[in-house]
Image 1 (cartoon, helix red, strand yellow):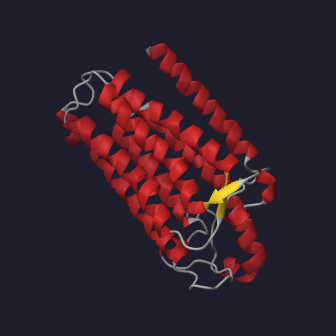
Image 2: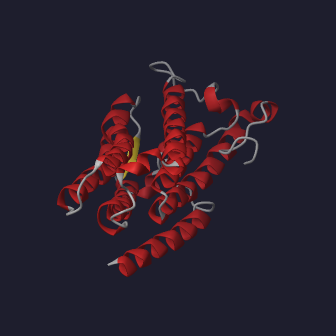
Length: 254
């Protein structure tokens, strides 16, 4: 089982590299880049629930059917992971404004990755990891403490940045605005930066290859999209973007 799992992780890691390269040439058709060429679509709120909820449910099932004892450490790690996806699946969609739509093709790709990721993280935590790794002493380890701080810092940046985006327009307003405040004072995709930081923290607190692969996938998916958003903002607000010396997604670097 361990060898099969490691092969699975290797395939996921290589696939992320392919996705990373491709997304610099093809911009995923949702949000401000939604077009009819991506096929039939559904209301954005429904789309986010359908796309994100499967990982929450799958992770619960993997935990439930595991023969491994759910000690305090595994329970905390499980809750941290699920905390993000509960917010993303059931709270974030309710906060969305407007009548944007999400293509079924994007929903299917997102849901497929999310289920695979649940098997990466849940498979490691509840089936593959050494039985003596996540003992209760792990909660006081440097990896867990540092990783948890980074995780919550990223989560805060992500949620705060999303709230800034939602507050850009008043009801009936269709104009585009360049976000300001928080990490948007440094990058044009602060919400993506927060998510990259968050899952980097998760990789540290679990100290696992599965966590690293997930952080790599997050980077591979969001950095090219941040580049597309930056390009769009340059077209719309070129002077302001340059005057504020904004980067794309990583402050002061890219």
